[in-house]
Structures are given as structure tokens and as C-alpha cells.
Image (cartoon, rainbow, N blue to C red; front, side):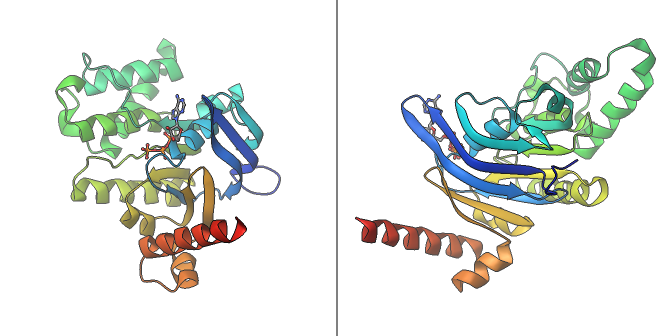
Amino acid sequence: MMNSSGVAIEARGLTVVRGSRTVLKGLDFTVEPGRITGLLGPSGCGKSTLMRAVAGTQAKVTGTLEVLGSPAGHPALRPRIGYVTQAPSVYTDLTVRQNLDYFAAILQPGRRHREDRRAAVTRAITEVDLSSHAGDLAGTLSGGQRTRVSLAVALLGTPELLVLDEPTVGLDPVLRRDLWNLFHSLAADRGTTLLVSSHVMDEAERCHRLLLMREGAILADDTPEALRRGAGTDTVEEAFLHLVDAAATRQENAR
Ligand SMILES: Nc1ncnc2c1ncn2[C@@H]1O[C@H](COP(=O)(O)OP(=O)(O)OP(=O)(O)O)[C@@H](O)[C@H]1O
């Protein structure tokens, strides 16, 4: 579902203060439904903070932030959003399947849903390509495998919006490619909206649209193609650096 203007996420003057710092500085942006929007920028620019605000877990948020037609953090949004944080949230003393069974029972409690839960768990494990590890203890998995368990948990409820904080960190190129293929099929086949952060610029090219961030502000909000064309560069990385330099020059001139 979207808001009345047909967008999945709409931010106006979004500001977040953490400790004594203003980490997000009056951001205006929209995220299109059924598309993959990449959130890119250097470490510390505020990507995780923005995602926490969208998922409704960030304190001291001011401005307007509407998610799937409701204010961010609204209880009605909980089953409609899948949020995967950077630190995989799995129980290390349970197997992969037991982790998923546990979360499935929270999402869909009751004996009469047992078969539905079993099907949802098997589907989610297959989607993240962990079928051969379903019986392994999560504590014995690699970091990348644990991240995929978290992603499987997020996929359990077939959420309309997936918020994924650096989901491909620590994954090898084959797994990264497979995960991006999964993201694309979720958007194309299910109409899922994905907001995916990364600080790896080559992943930018895999997104439909990009929000480029720097120091708590949005430097650009466009398609990878338009960003490259606008900056006259071959890659999004070069376009980003071009935009950073232009912003620095504007700041200098304003002094
Ligand atoms: N609990 C906190 N209290 C105060 N400042 C914080 C807190 N957590 C994060 N920050 C600051 O907020 C800023 C943005 O952090 P955030 O984690 O959103 O960045 P990021 O772009 O996701 O970085 P990374 O790519 O390294 O994960 C950073 O400068 C960080 O120091």
C-alpha cells in the first residue's frame, strides 16, 4: 500500500538527533513502491539512523515521515515491514529452522496455522538459499549465513516493505549476486518495496533508484543512469565523488 501521493515512503524535514549531534538534517525524499531504492554513502553519514527511523525504532525523530500511508512507528505497520539490522538477530543456540519456527509462531500463533507456518518457514529458508543448513545451529554458521537467517526471518510475513541495513556485508560475490537477484524478484513478482543500504558503490548499479547521502544530508535522489549522465561519469562512484566535490565547493563559497 502507498500514501495518497502514490509513494511508499515520504520524508519531509526529517531530522534525527542522537546524543548531542544532529545526525539527519531535515531530509526530504520519497521512495517508490515496488522498486529497489539504494541508500548509499560513507560510513557514519546516517544510513542506519534513517533506516531505524523508517522502521520506527529511532528516538528523537522530528519532521514528517510517512511509511506505507501511516506515520513511521505506527503499530499497524509492524507486520507490514521487514527490517534487518546490521547485527544479525538470531538465536545462536537454535537451528536455522528453529529460529524461523520461533519467529513464525510470533507472527502467526495458534495450532490451526501450523501448516501455514511450516510452509512459510520452508519458503523463507529456500529463498535465502539455506536449505542445506536448515538443521545447523545458527551459532555454527558463518557471518554471511547468519545475515541470511535474519533476512529469512524478515521474509516470513511477506512484508510489503523490506528495510535492509547492509545485507551483503561479508558475503562472497556469488552470494551477493544471488541476494540481489532475490531482491529483484521480490520487487518484480511480489511488488515488495526495498530500501537497501550499502557503502559498496558497485551495488548502486543494481538499484532502480538511489539516495546518495553525506553527513546527514541527501546529496542526490535519482536513478543510477541519470546520476552518471548528470555528472558525465562512467560509474555511480565517480558521480558520487563529483557531487561531494560540488557540495564542498558550494560550502566554501557560502563562507
Ligand atoms: N547512540 C548514538 N549516540 C550518538 N551518536 C550516534 C549514536 N549512534 C550513531 N551515532 C552517530 O550518528 C551518525 C550516523 O550513524 P549511522 O550508524 O546512522 O551511520 P551509517 O551511515 O549507517 O554508518 P555505517 O555505514 O558505518 O553503518 C554517526 O556519526 C554516529 O557517530
